[in-house]
Length: 311
Image 1 (cartoon, rainbow, N blue to C red):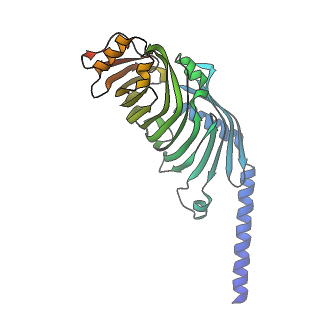
Image 2: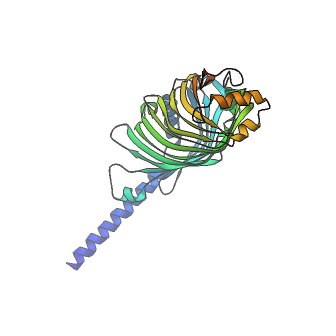
């Protein structure tokens, strides 16, 4: 019996050793070039308005993949680099892998815009997938080409979490839910509002969801030394982001610092008389490239000092 046990243990050990050697050899011989071409093709198909270029794919041990120098351009403007991802790492959940489960979570970590995005991807049946993650210190001011396209400047740091469920082939048709916050931000205006040529804010928050190419903003807030804002609305996505239609409704509560920056006493008195419960209601609508804003006070739509909008 002892000899039989020793024999079984030795056979099992040899089997595990052989499997381990085969796995290592397969990983060392991983066809990175072929996978790289396949991955770029999938990304270009999933996002038809964008062009993806990945410089390098490397296989590491144990069972790790690293993508380097990822450049994303506008489809019709190869010189217009929208954003750049220095590196992105993928690795399976080793504990779940050893359990030989059918659905093994894959951890990812991406460096971009001086921040990070990290989380896990869980494959489902067929092409279905679930993805979750956390954003840390994403610098939106680094999106130079996007800001230039909108004829504006902006900055701020994004933090938040998100969950997504959908398919590999058509991610924009999936469901996304995110809780986001932008800190220490600013957005320039193409036309002054209340004497301001840019909006500086301490924080901007929203609960964002995407379903069937419609982005919904809920429980949105903006906290600035000049005013406090609450808002909600939608963004209908098109193949070109800048032509997507946005509609936001909200309330703005001016603070004393805002009135202090207005030199026209008559204008200050007029605005204060238009407040309802210390607030003005507003609507932002139009394309993302050229949205317009309308304020409504006690006497209806307000013209004059706050006429015009974000155009």
